[in-house]
Image (cartoon, rainbow, N blue to C red; front, side, top):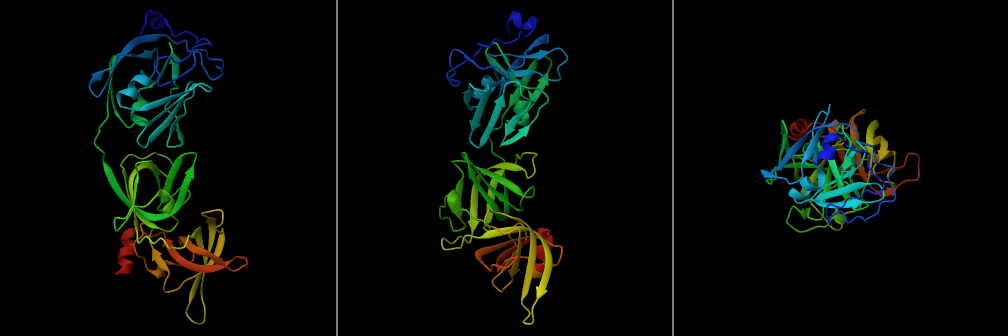
Length: 353
């Protein structure tokens, strides 16, 4: 930290650009500075930053009255092999590595993690052509371990992947603007969102390779993913492998409705049907539908384990999957291919015995 900065952080000039390396690739002249926030607080001390036991050449700093130290973003990110892209128009930086992607914008306490905004209490600051972020960025966004003592901040990142396996029924398959994800175990704010990347492996339970495009609603999958999850609803997690049970290339593309059983009807022949009212899982899905049950209808819990049809009662929370063949009545009537009922896995297993 230079002497001028130790006396105080001056207001940034309009022509300031990040010139700390080719990774940012910014022009020499900046013509837009609307997002910059003047920094004038006194700096109480410089801070030595260590990443995985290696002392960085670039230092951090602590402002008078601040709750935590500011650390140099580029130096920390490059120390763990992240790629950086400088966006000249809005003074933001995109960082990526494996399945981790985040966006940091100068002057805004809104750090992006897996497409969700997360505040840390301190906005990024551009000083002497370098962007600084609070030390908590390393732990909350990059999933490292931060130890701050006196004028030193030590950050460690474990290379060992701690993975867990989660089973569930697919309720959403999303692909937009390069972002791909699969939701299981529920819809809306329920369940778990599996963020996938170019190196995520897709296979059948027989070991045959699949592609992301072969994933579909109603499939029962087993996902190997990180233990790290966002605090959003539903939570999101980087995913390494998705295994599809009972995959068939000839299987019909299903529609789905998530909601509550409004009525259970039994006809003179003993056949049952459910009226489900809630929200369609796709644009073609119905918000309200009557689904006829048959011997071929699968009734499972949110993990895909067999459940008892006795759980299908009025008021039950369910997700009904069906094909596109429906009557033109209101509500339409179709055949139930699979019903996911919201019961605990232990209860479902006991019912199946």
